[in-house]
Every structure is written in structure tokens, then in C-alpha cells.
Amino acid sequence: MPAAIRDVMPAFELFQPTSVADTLGLLERHGADAWVMGGGLDTFDWLKDRLRKPKVVVDLSAVAELRGIKDAGGGIEIGAMTTLTEVATNALVKERFGLLAEATGLVASPQIRNQGTMGGNVAQDARCWYYRAGWPCYRAGGNICYADTPTAVNREHAIFDADRCVAVNPSDTAPALIALDAQMVVRRGASELVVPAQDFFVGPGVDITRLTLLRPGDLLTAVRIPGTWAGKQFYFEKVRDRQVWDFALVNVASAINASGNAISEARLVVNGVSARPYRLEAVEAFVRGKARDEQTAEQAGALAVRGALPLRHNAYKVPLMKALVKRAIRGAGAWTS
Amino acid sequence: MPEGPITSVPGGQPGVSRRNFIKGVIAAGATVSASAYLFRANIAGQDSSLPGSVERLITLNVNGQERRVDVLKHETLAMTLRYKLGLTGTKLGCDRAECGACTVLVDDVPHYSCSVLTHTVRGRKIVSIEGLAAPDGTLHPVQQAVVDGQGFQCAFCMPGFVMTAVGYLKTNPNPTRAEMAHGLSGNLCRCADYNKILDVMMNAAEGMRRA
Image (cartoon, rainbow over all chains, first blue to last red; front, top):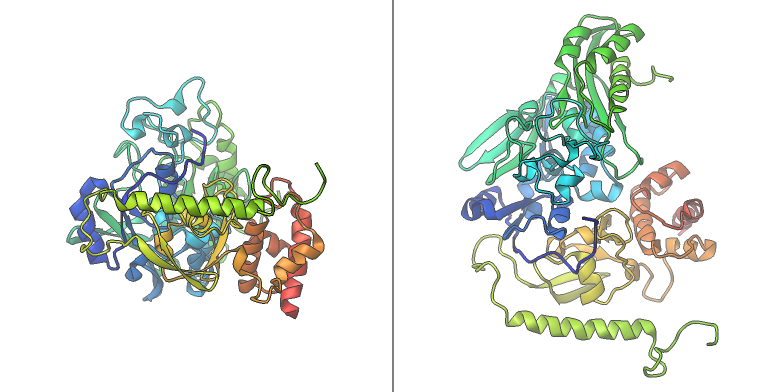
């Protein structure tokens, strides 16, 4: 369905709670009828296209306790409603976790970063256009994947771990957060779950209708980044068709702890290649103890794409990912071609 | 038909400008639709005593004025500005946060007004293109630079670009050309007049530093 201006969105009841407690109360009261809205940039597409028709929208913009960046013992805690611009320009984030600042600064466009939130960027839904156009696919609760048929246009889709659905996770901040061993703080009724970022995202084998473990009624309140990787060597790169607005075709985030030229520990995560951010644990194990040089980078790239299963139009993602992983191991400034 | 600006609507009253004619239609329409809603039942049987429930009649701070306006729960700021307040300088291009034509400042920060619920900006300072000039009519330095440099062709995107530039220059008053391009990257121009727009905005930055 092409984007079209049709007066305004369909009507819904709007709530603007001012505390987490009130928010949870509203979510409990309205259950699956309630839609949680952060910055709204994912939300409005669904509503304007009439593909989701929630009776109730719970707007988090007035919940002050969900905003802001706090120093937390060498690490930081970022409220879910903190805008992406705040994250990208915050002095503490830039000083300790330049990887996240860089990834956040590459999201969409300046105005979207001024409004889009940390929580929204990690919790956003898939951008497969068959799904977003309202086709009754697996992800929408049906029993077919329109992006994985002989005539499908699937240039942006998955090359790893496809399981019926071939959509990818579109987030730029997600791979950076996983590389930094971040934890997601989720309120579920009276309990608080603290989930490693890596486990926050789920593939179609776990839940084919959702990209994260958030269920109706859940509220992502904050992202915690421990001090473990503060000030280490980082690399982030995002490849997209246009240098603004577009989601990544492939992006890569690496965090490397090196002594001299030897890599003592590494985190390497790629997004845009599968339904959940794709952490390359085999490559992390391979580079441990090796010199940070051309040869290690070359081998890491080759190892990273092992097992890739491209679709008809996205085989280009294999050499692209290989090159990005190579650069992520070599590091910034070291690459000339 | 003689060349020159259109000052009357064919068949209409002589001397009524096209813009004022349209604004009159908008005002009449808003009154009619508002009265229709008065007689409509609440859509989700909402209890207005619940925490976080929202009143429809709100006060917005637009261009330095307090404006009382009846806003639907699902209404975007662009719709309120254009069709409730008659501020048609804010343009709607895509209605999808993908073009920038509807950019306005919310507390000095550029936002796509097509993708902001009006209810979320209650109590915040909204500035649209109509609110940039001084009360005596003196143009904002960015507007003056646009006039001086004639930086746009069709100029449909111009109000959005101007608002983004005003917001961006508050955070970086002395940008390089590349920084300015990055600052304005959330706005599209279908005439692809980007070089001229950038020339003008660099002049605008200089104008603001002098002002």
C-alpha cells in the first residue's frame, strides 16, 4: 500500500500518564487493546495505513522518569524515552561508549532523531514491505512468506537464520548495545526483568510475530550499559542506499579490548541480516589472542559469512557483510579500500 | 487573462485573495466538524477521571500566542496548525516523516509536525514559519537570506528547510558547509536545488551571527 494522505488517523482513546506506575496500570486495564507509543515514528505508519487499529494509545511522552542519561558506576543507564539526539550528543555516552553515540547518530534523519527514542529504536517492528503493506504473512499471523517466493522482491531481507519469515531487524542501536553487553530493563506487571540485550531480541523460531520478547502489557523502561567496555576500541559502520532516512542494508558494530596489537577480547554484531541482531560469537572466539592486522581481519570476514543463505535478490549482502566485518576488526582509520 | 498575482477567485467576490478564501473555508469547516463532535459519544467509553486521560479542548503556545483549540486525540500537529489554526505556511508533503516539508520547532528543536500528536506538545513552545518574523515585520535572518539569494525554485519545501535551518543554527551557529548539509539532511527538495539552498543557508548563518 503506498503512503497516502487520508485525512488523519482513525480515532483512538489517548492516555498520557505521567508515571511508570500509572502507565502499567493503564496497560493492565486495557490489555491487548493498548498500544504503547514512544516517539511515534514506527507507530504512525501502522495507524495511518489502517493496518493496526488499537482502541487505546498510551503515549509515554509525559513520563519524566523514563527520560535521561545517568552515570551508573562506570556504566550508564539510558531511560527508554531519551531521544536519539540526546544519546548521540551526550558527553558521557561519547566519552565512554562512542560506539553507541556513533550508531545513534546514523539513525534516520535529524528530525527523527530529535523525536525517536532509545526504547523505540530497539523495540521497533520489522520493515519488510510485504508485512508493512498489510499482507497476511507469517509475521502478521498468516501462513505464507511473500518475501520468499520465486518472484518476490527481497533485496533487503535476511541471509541468516530465516525460519519461514525472512524479515530483518532494522535497528542501528541494537548491534551497538549487544556489543557493549547492555541490559534491557523491562517492567512486567509487578516484576522487573533485566534481560541481556542479546536475549531481548527474538527470532521467528521463538516468536514469529515479534522481534523482541516484549509482550502486550510489558514496558521497556531503560537500557543499562555496564562499565566493562567503557573507552575500549570501537567500530561502527552502516551501509544504506541513501545517506539519510534509510534503514541499514547491513550494519556492523565491534568493541575490541586490545593489549598492544593483540586482541584480548572482542564483541562483533551485525544487523540487517537476520530477524535478530546477529552476534558473531565464532568470529569473536577466532580473533581472541590474534594480532589486529590485515590477515586476521581477512579471515574474520570469511568466517563471518559462513553459512549465509541468500535469497534471490540479496546475495550482495554476503560480500558486503564480509567487508564490514573485516573493517570492524581492522578498526577505524586503518582501511583504505 | 492578465499576468500577475491572482487576487480574486473567479466568480467570487472581487478583492478576496485566494489565501484568505481558503482560510475562510477552513475556519467554517472547523466550526462545523467541531460541533459534530460535540454530539458524538466517547469512542472507547473513556472515564476522564483515569490517570493520564486527555481533555480535547487545550491551550497551545503557537508563535508566541496562547491559542485555545479543540484537538482530536488522533490529530497530528500539522493538521492542527493548517486546518484548525489556519497556519498554512507549514506544508504537508508525505505525511510520513520522510520529506521534511512540515518541519516546525518544538521548544526550538525541529520536528516533523505530520508525525507529532498535537496532544504531546501541550505546554511546549511551537514555532511555525509564520512565527519567525519580528512583530514589526522584520524578517528572520534565515528568511532574509532566502529572499536575498532566491535559493528555491518551486519553494514548497522552503518553510520546512527554513525551520530546520533556524533550529540547527541554534545548536551550531558557525557550521561548515558539510555540517550545514548534515543539519538539513532531514529535508527533501524535489527540484533538487540543494546547492543553492546550501548557499543561502550559509549566508543565513552569517546573517544570524551578525544579527
